[in-house]
Image (cartoon, rainbow, N blue to C red; front, side, top):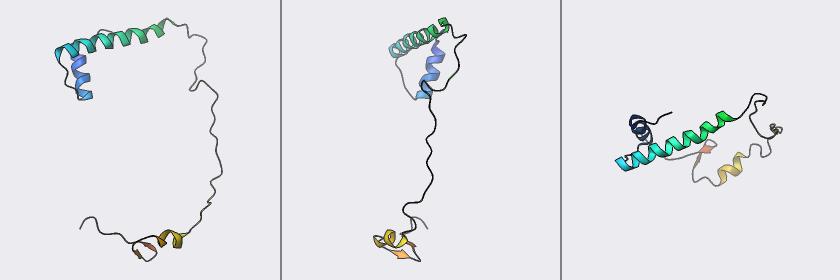
Length: 95
């Protein structure tokens, strides 16, 4: 794949970068080198390789969802500067 000036300009817009002409030329070289390196993967024979999502067998370790602290409203509200009807009373943030 050939990296064009338009591609570099578009990537610069997406990345919100302002590149000088020298930086654009260097970016074109760097992107070409990256694509050439990734293109080496096409040389690999993956015909009999099974698709996988992880290199190691991974399974979710689930635990029971058990409530350990319960409803301790009185202790939670003990440190509140203001309390009204069993809830925190905070100043208005807008009218």
